[in-house]
Length: 305
Image 1 (cartoon, rainbow, N blue to C red):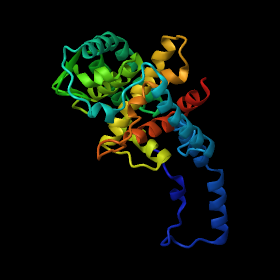
Image 2 (image 1 turned 45 degrees about the vertical axis):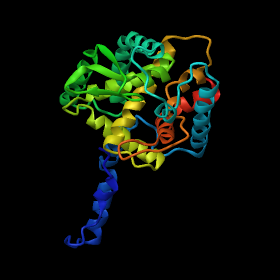
Image 3 (image 1 turned 180 degrees about the vertical axis):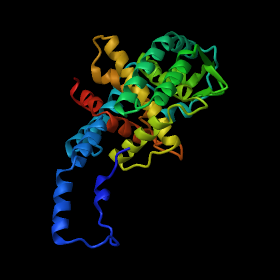
Image 4 (image 1 turned 180 degrees about the horizontal axis):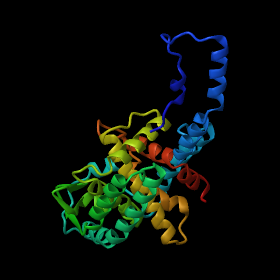
């Protein structure tokens, strides 16, 4: 927790009066005391992110990057179908060729994705200073164990354009057939698999609640949106998905443009009907929040490097 140290120096109006000499001595003593050094140390411990305010330049790059994501979706032969488009489509049988192909891709990518999620969660734990105690480490290790235990992707007609997990059956990710068909790229599938794996990692004991809180607080500061409680959990799950997909791009280089491959993890949010709810940001607001949290992605989308 960042302490507002300025509040430590408020004058107590009921304090006993001291002589002018004693007050001068006390002020001098405070000025040479080790408190400022401690304050600097505290700030240093929290500098996993340089600022919780976007500069005008970073904000402009973010808006440009958001446009790149949705432009690439249109141009990309493997571009994801937007969520609102998926919702308007008729149900897709489990045995349909598109659903079968999507399910095979998701099952094939699941082992790799689990490793990417574990690595990403470990990095976020460092970034958001979640390694301060043995208890924190134990909670994180239990979360990792739950990720490792997932083995099955189950296509489901009734789930349509959604993916979900049941915490009483934490070895299975349920994937709607429309969603499977609407994410024709590895990057798109990895982002959604990762999202669901984070819910499983959190589990019934809320192992990642502190991470959700800190990501939500930072995203709220950067975007001026309200991102707490379930919204923070959903956004953090999306963040892990985007970062895992970005790590996959590094592991599997090809001749496709970098902005196109990054866009695939976000492009299903390029909706026309941009509506959120109490538990979720709107899809386009989700893109902006994720890019605000990781300005490097914005730069890579805009400048291709």
